[in-house]
Image 1 (spheres, rainbow, N blue to C red):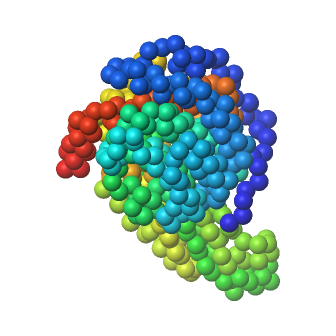
Image 2: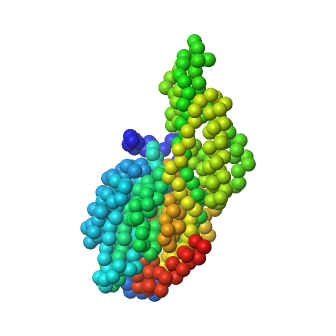
Image 3: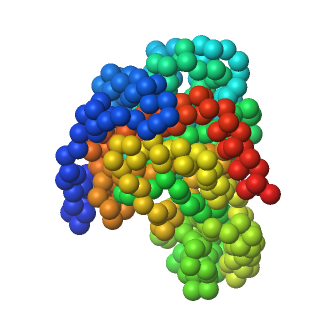
Length: 427
């Protein structure tokens, strides 16, 4: 796969990211008492993260300046692996079936293998745009949380398990890691996401990637077009069919796509056309119906144009199963620093963190790195992900994730409660 060019400068119609208010979260972390219980240990975590501030933020900025798309995050993965190794983690890189996956384990000083708390990080970028979803902050905050927990390892029984997870934007890398057994044995999985709003609970749309290929027959577009079978016509017809289908879709369902390949010259009837699509829904049963309908639309476009159509489904992501016990712990630790999270964002996206949440208790809270209304997957959000405001939020997220993990380590009953809630949600 060809590595995309560095993101272009913002077009004239899209202004630079709005100036974020100046914040001093690291100062707040130093002066504000953490939430009870275990406030003394949590204070040591906050101090360790603040002491490693330059290292954590340098990692965020390096990854932001050097974006790599899904499955190609070799430099980002290496930087993450090297960072946690410096703080005592036993690192496997690569691990499992993905060359850019990372696993680091830190044994607690009190022995044993339980609980095992997972600290996650993402670092893939969007092709052609860069870190328009802020995964640089997610990578750095995960490393920061790992650093904070390393500072209190002598107080812990069990293990901290750091997982660098590739390919969230396309391909659902976490599902590969689930299949590889890398989430087996974990008692919790914690991962923050940057946003334009603060909220601890998150809704996700089930989604899947679909590559559609139409194959026809080439011919001269002027002298004998009747000899050809136009694959691009089939792809255009599929887009038209999707546009009509959208009128009857439920409000929480989405279908969208792009053209990857549409021919080689205007005077040649295209014998091959390729599109990439995604379908999404909050309802798993309705999502399955959408898959069947999409296949039928591909078949209909092929029939109408005399071409052959193939739809290949990859990278399925599931809805989010937020664990209420973990939500409450994270919420309490976050509020101690003066952040009042709002309700779940009604503007839903998709993430393979949903897949994780159905195999282990998990949360995926969001913290604002920019003003409300800044769209994700945009130049504005990309630029916001490297601002001082984003830096401070990265440190806050690292601290609160680590403190939430610390609660679980210090209180085995909360781990049991998280599992009971998880089992109830599965039923």
